[in-house]
Length: 499
Image (tube, rainbow, N blue to C red; front, side):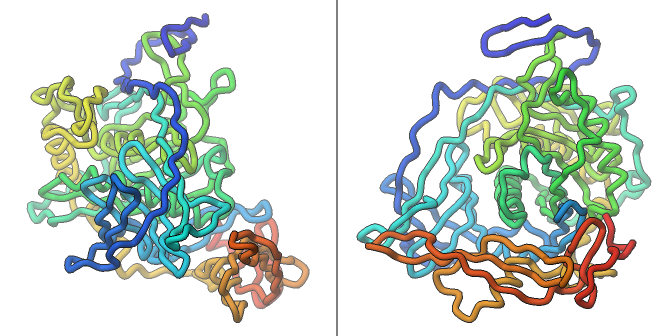
């Protein structure tokens, strides 16, 4: 039965399940983008910061950020076949900056044309360079600032003590130690549903986007202590598989999808590099059950304290490229790290879990649904206590940072080298040229690289010329379904490198 209440549409269905619900007031209409010309005021201050004036009312004091693992594991499909590619995380970190006061996370590059910025300016705005652009009289690049459209939202948090969703505590839980490190790095692997990653023309762009989102979550987690919790992105899957999606009347149903995705992610844990958390990001509307009705207002769901367990998964909506999922992503990750919603009882599935009864819902912190302003970007003391308890409870096997000094077997050059870097290396003169795409010719194992020449006409910039270059494919570059180039011959992909 279909019913409408306010801005929500519901389909009546019988259920006895209790879901914790998040309600965020809607945006009352989108704003027109604001044209700005960011200017670098100081490249390096005494404390290593970079000062950028975005516009007259906003100057950012940016410091270097680091959220990508040294080696990022990317699972994707090329020419219909699944392949694993290793991406240099430092190529992302080198351009990643943050302003912890403004809650801004951006990639920033500067050259003779000026400063180019892309990312999140704060809780409510994002910035991107204009695709068709010309420098201003002051030699700066035009950018557009957009309002981040926050949707009305319902969020579900599944307790570890909830019936068939109860976590099976691993042997990690029995390993206790008082020697807690000052900083615990939690490895996050993100699976992008095809509705999401189809927005990105190149997987490197998807990686940068996820790193910006994750660093934004880290800015909120900076208040954690004893230990401080930092998230690290260890990889991304550009999923073409829908086996984990459970649909009802053609729409994605949150709770059964989470259970199915839990099994999917657990079976692929070694393929993902044994991360601590796996998060599914989707662009489609997520549906949930609220007050007995089936509604499209669902936005996220996760297991409370699922980190480092078989229930180490969460999922949420995000409009790819627009950063609309920043709050949902941070909120669901906090659930996985052990935080319940404010003013809640302890989680009975976690011994000694402190709960959050002493932190009022009406105070409007991040794990409440009331947005009173600055509090909504911070965790309450109860949330901090719960996350600290769960991370300590999980023990050293959860704390171990596997990215340091990792030894990787069965790694070939074609898995290590980015196609963009491979192709750009073929050019003697790289000025005013950008890489657009590449394809591998299976019959010859030749890489065909495509570029656009960025020229100036009458003072305006525009892409006017296509350039093509060829070179021999590196070992393990994909050349067909379950096939890779090895010594310039297209062969069956080695079993040990298949996802």
